[in-house]
Length: 239
Ligand SMILES: NC(=O)c1ccc[n+]([C@@H]2O[C@H](COP(=O)([O-])OP(=O)(O)OC[C@H]3O[C@@H](n4cnc5c(N)ncnc54)[C@H](OP(=O)(O)O)[C@@H]3O)[C@@H](O)[C@H]2O)c1
Image (cartoon, rainbow, N blue to C red; front, top):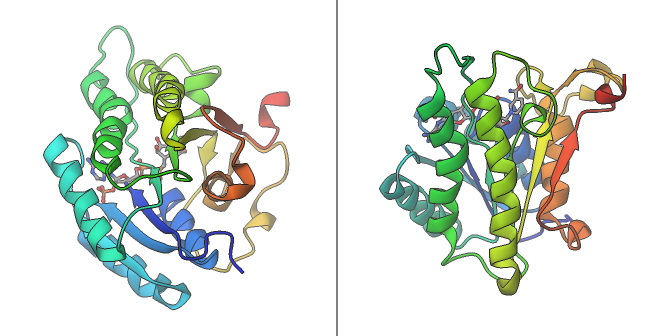
């Protein structure tokens, strides 16, 4: 018995790292999965590799505006016959400073607006028992470096967004949580022994270590967790 048996999971903004690993673990837990990004070749390759673990579909599309987000969500819902859980892992990282905050618009779009567009488009599918997971960053909830002006501000805003959305959706029985990763190290590969690539206290970790927490937030094991960001730093902040 998988922890996500027959659940329909949509993962928006899938990279070769965290999104790919999350899709893999969701399938292994029995979910049907729909993945999204803008690059079709990547999504097709992932579906080819992950097909043997369960039903996986993909939708190519840009979710940086309401119409695009709606399009992706509607297509995913029709391909896997609904949406129980939603993961938004759209990224993008720009370094800038107060001297020249060139990344501000893009960071606010990717980390603040996109989650709102995607959740708005998903509301008609989400229901009691649904779980939504967003991805902040340790730079957004703890110490940021001086060249992370726009990124850290956007990720901090995303952390507050989680709490605000959770409080709004509480009456519908829909949970909203987030994780705050340290550096996500490298690309995901199915079935490997990723644990040998890191040790407790390291300041970066393979995608699997972060994806596992996302999966837990989707399962009923975390049913009493709502409106929080879980720092996932492997103890590195203690050093
Ligand atoms: N990597 C790290 O070290 C790190 C550390 C802390 C937090 N995080 C956060 O963890 C999450 C995953 O990290 P990551 O490194 O895997 O992220 P990423 O590669 O920067 O972004 C994930 C994917 O989102 C897709 N994407 C970007 N804009 C999109 C749009 N408008 N519409 C649809 N898809 C879009 C991109 O694929 P396409 O180009 O194919 O669309 C990209 O591969 C992100 O939220 C990131 O900010 C990452």
